[in-house]
Image (cartoon, rainbow, N blue to C red; front, top):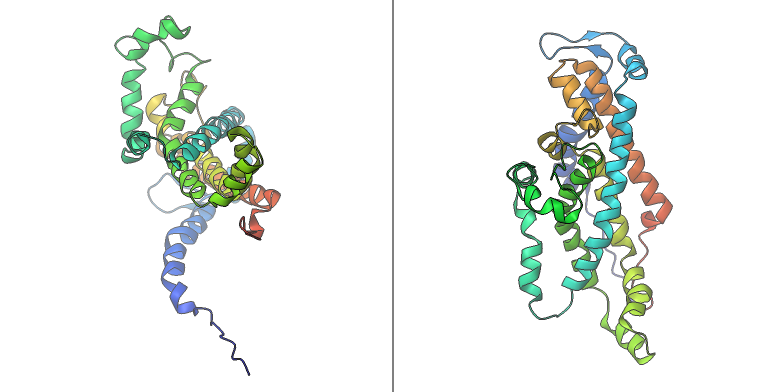
Length: 296
């Protein structure tokens, strides 16, 4: 008679600390913000219940449509720029090239800096009078070096700065995942005469599909809620050309002192981020978490 080893699942007590932490700092703030979205409050005193008045004001907000479009542009642009670059650098960093460790360290330096510090550095670099933009702008088709003050260049400049900061993080994800790909797959491909490009598209990309989905979810949600970079780089300007929803929320709450309407925008950001995550996960099959190594 053979005995079967049965492993019991950890009890709830092991998850209790994380559940309490998430409840206090995740669920409770969301519930409070949802409540405030139905009140009139200037940040002081007692909130006054006004029902759906704040939600009705959303349709009369002339800045909301443009802020939503700008947020969409920033989100899609960030994903299109960051994903291929982080993927390629991450796969390269997982190899055994000469000076790979030194170059990887240089690539990952932005991870050590805060968003505020990076934004302030680029404000100086992109200054059309005294920054590098004034010197090098003429060589890339911008003679006046005015990136942040031009309506057609400001948002692409923001996308560039955000990408510069967060590509190293996603590169780490791809580097770690690429190192887990079994070497036997590449050896078999070489025996069949497959070159590096064919190996990349036939082996590396399929093996990294779950990492691509996970990275994309974090990238998209992070771009939807991007705030500090836009605030410090352009403050929504020129005009409202770079005003995103998080910045609009900040201005309504802490400049106009309309915390009720700011809470409406906050709830919308939570809903958009959640729906976006669920759609990406469900549409890609990531929720099934199928193994990339099945059969190996």
